[in-house]
Image (tube, rainbow, N blue to C red; front, side, top):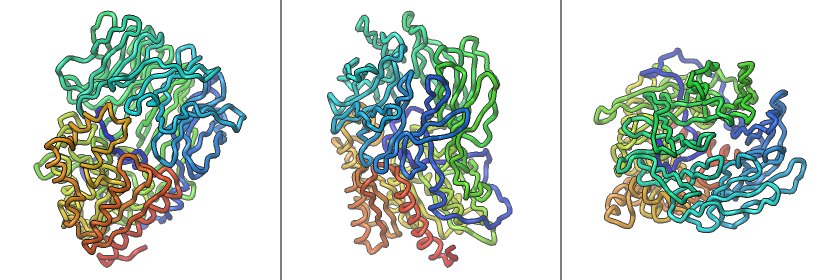
Length: 640
């Protein structure tokens, strides 16, 4: 579901796997327990661009303690570092076509002003291609002949992202499309004649326009006056068609094809889950579609010309996080996550049908059998609405050994708890905490009716879904119902503060990871580059410049902090541009006045989400100490 989820915490990944209707009751056992340092010896990996000859793959990994760019030899699996940053994270974008030179992105201290950097193979000197002090830029691909790079930048106007080209010889920028109305460029035809633009109307309604740069005509693709979420995917090889995602007339997203000359539309693929995306290979030999089936993506492979579905190796206990097909159409990269290991990179050979794993991101000191596979559970909320959630039962739990628990709330609004891996969750579960990751109403992935249920209702019914998750946990025979806490990052941090403010007796303690405390300030001080969807954000949550202030005040935890009487821990990045540090400063001071125990941890070199391992180790390690003190110890349980 294409929703504006501005407070989703990118690195606060949520997790699930399996397909059951109630928590399992396996025999308990004592697993080997691991330290937070051991969990964070595991590495995260992302990206996965093929070199022009299909021999190498460009990825990003934090195995050094911070994200850097690496190159993997696909044949041997050998990996070598291309960058060696120790201060700012480096995220690899792509190889410069026909070379081993690379483009990567980096900001400063998590301020989200990402720059595009050129690094030539074998050269330690780098070139900042977007050097504006407050400039934010995104890599947007290459022209068909591979001689020019597209990128989006707000250098001209900090509110809007214009489309630029740079040739790969001089690296001089040329303006292609000036974005003066907040209609964002999402796709470019190979002949450069057509642009697909997106206009954000509300959090659940977007328009697609095709701009003909030759005739200067602009045509709306989706139906007029119908509230639908629409998102361009890509233009066809012959430049005559645009593929896009839509939920028009349906509970779930599906794929449509728009013929530009005839202005006709045709459905390409639909199912009873959200279609999350589609990739069509360079010469349109293959089509890959991935579908969000109950909190994890399943991949479907087709012959693009005939539409025939092709066989593909089954991926057990895995969520397809990303797909890329090499320009030769001989290989496909898959990024796959599961509940017991961070994402790994695989390469599929179309000729041999071999699916090869290139990486092993789990720390070899950790036995995966000591970790916990999650399961999908469903429970009834206060109004009998069925709420899906992702659940982790500790190996130690039994009716004779009741364990404390944590209700985890994902980011958003509009995020989704889904398959993946988060070291903090496995760390807590390994140390005897049950964790339930809630897909409260308003979460994506369960149809647009469910998706819209929290509009202009944040902190009310969606929060009650969180409260009823606690009641569900309390019904389980191996949970200590007197020792249940609440935790969340970003929008989930807001929900944590809201739970402690508006339902002060429900949870034993709370952990807020840079959550919104005061909606009025947060909505007024959003970064300038959110301008194109500010109206949609206000429509979703409330406009702080109108009578909406009454409701925003009612549901801002800072203004009701006198109600908080349970221990609180707050983690905050000093450079966070979304949830400003002052939000956390003030909620901490307000709660301290209540005589309530408060622990406050600030990271001077982080923004909205933790990127550096040393900070994750420090912050997440202290979360266990905090929970042990206020959940386990207060219940008279032994701290291990």
